[in-house]
Amino acid sequence: MSLGLNLSFCVKRWVTPALWAPLVASLGVRRVQLTYDLVDPLWPDDLLDDLARAVRDEAGARGIEVHSAFIGLAHYTYNQLLHPEPRVRDAAERWMARAYRFAARAGIAGVGGPVGAMAAAPDGREPEAVGERDYADLVRRLRRLAEIASAEGLTELYAEPTPLRREWPFSIAQAERLSADLAGSAVPWRYCLDWGHATMAPAYGERDASLEPWLTRLKEHVGVIHLQQTDGILDRHWDFTEAGIVDPMEAARLHERAGLADVPVFLEVFYPFEMTDAEVLDRIRRTCAILEPAFPSAAPR
Amino acid sequence: MSLGLNLSFCVKRWVTPALWAPLVASLGVRRVQLTYDLVDPLWPDDLLDDLARAVRDEAGARGIEVHSAFIGLAHYTYNQLLHPEPRVRDAAERWMARAYRFAARAGIAGVGGPVGAMAAAPDGREPEAVGERDYADLVRRLRRLAEIASAEGLTELYAEPTPLRREWPFSIAQAERLSADLAGSAVPWRYCLDWGHATMAPAYGERDASLEPWLTRLKEHVGVIHLQQTDGILDRHWDFTEAGIVDPMEAARLHERAGLADVPVFLEVFYPFEMTDAEVLDRIRRTCAILEPAFPSAAPR
Image (cartoon, rainbow over all chains, first blue to last red; front, side, top):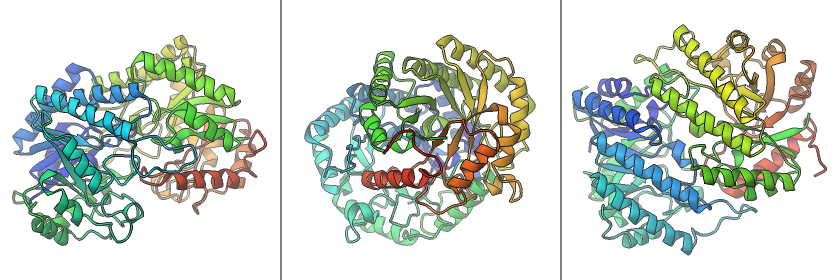
């Protein structure tokens, strides 16, 4: 149960493999999750192919495994596969297909992230859940994406539940239903659970805001876990120099109790663009040290 | 000096003109600034053309002026015209060209936003400023973009200074230099000043963190002003239901004293994706009411 880093902390700072790979190595970390906030899959093929090669080379040279590639905030902004306009959904599918192509060329076996968000109602009233027709369309698109991923040679896809009723899955029951509806897809769809999503009390209620039932009930479908510090009020994605409700040691024990000790864990933290690079470096170093006892790095630091 | 709204508060919620235009009208606001967080210029032409028509129709039907279109957080993520890889800069230029094309078809006369960010150094040490060679390249690209904008029929472009040394312009002196270097460009490059950028003390020092010298020294080059509430510590983009250092009445007086009473002002606030739609609606309504005495809406509410 060693710690991996989502490269979210490198966004707009250490933006090329030649910049982030040595930094990751200096942190003593051996496993990362690439974010598409560093690479836009809509860039031209020749550029993407060279970047994919650089990912392989720079990570490979330092013994860093690039486990997966995840949607970042840039693409999450656009409602993806549940935008009210079907042609935006189509565009999001093409974006994902190009994301898969890039990952395959970079030697990355899995791709994931949140899958889509409905628009808000004019009066701001939120429905209990995504409607049935839109859900059916989403399932069709996710099955199609699994075929594309399979053709590219990927071996796993990840859907990330979010604490928003306009997205799917919002709840454990919705995740169970989606898994049933995606059974037998060309590549398995698994879940990426996030410590700051399931624990958000305003979304799930004080009593139910906990990752534990997600881990136990979705166990066989959990592919990745995102770690962050949070206050349980919003989805903070703080690092562990901040005080919050997530105790790293308890988190590690909970993963183990759920039989998920082998599921890769990635720290996913976001910093304000205007924070200095020196402060980000200092915080990420201190966070790795804080997490070390609970999630030991694979290599000596 | 009436209030305009940057549509940042609609992102991932009221995402189509049919959704945001009635909402804006219900707030009694008559002028908006579109954000490219609602429309990705890389979407296919037929989709963009239909969305451009919808912007014209829905805004026009309600007497809403779409003054300009601005880069949002999605595109800002990618370092744009100062990315270390020249081909990413080229891709950002093509993105901007498509953004201009969309704006022209939507009947929007001006486009703007931050223009680019250098990568961070491996050790996190930040240089005093963007280097000379990269700055020269930036100027070349901005002049070329002005030609493209002119060919599309746009009449104004805006560069937005940010409180980051890796971007340009970071300082008033840099903005003065850039204006001189862009003199005579095919379409004028003006500045979008932001109440939360110039006032950020960790970036500019307690003594100099103020919008006033930006307004007076750059006066003839100021095209747009972004309004936000902030604490002067980070670039918060809070709404005015939050306590902070920006007093709306003083802000309006300062614009007037600087001779910039006619420069369009747009509130630019960002909410966490996971905040409920009802809360966002409530906050934006209260913010408009709080700002009304200082920045009266053009129409009765």
